[in-house]
Image (cartoon, rainbow, N blue to C red; front, side, top):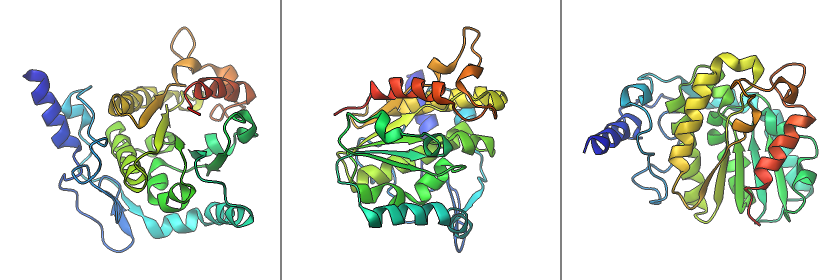
Length: 270
């Protein structure tokens, strides 16, 4: 009974029907679905809130999340989005592939396609500095057109660095999942755990909590996977392994990407 009450309380705290006002014009709250998004009640039964893994007081998103400015985002990401569109004009990838999407950890992964050459089609759509909020906002251009069999997402780290709470990142991931599964119910979605960057070691508690929330949300969903690269990047003292990162202590070096490749490849399904 106590656990059931905790689950209900957390559901109220995270539910998309929470009283978050939509901003006017080109701005909207990323705690509420972007225009046209499905809600949990309308989405597939596969899309549901996670069980309680922390107390509702900790899980509750901030009451006034920062509005997402779509016009500013269009301007910020125009170059990247135009480049993707140009690639598609030259040759749109065949449906049924594996789509890697997310922030600079995807964009900077040299020879990513070759790293997963056992997959018939691999598509790389990383745009540096992006947040999970951006992946949701531009999902109609970044994800849905490719009709991927599996979507591999790395995002959320920049959201946390810009002040989003773990619960807010979870909500953004839920929106992402709902969009994809509404458009293509058979698509698998894999969330690559947020990495422990030495440059952002102060964020480790928030990163680890976010990873736990997303894993809990993913567990038990036939279409969702949680790929834990985080654990493989910690030393025996629980600190980030510096030898996996470049000079900026934020982005991966080839050794770090080799770790990612091994962990992710084991979880991709042909």
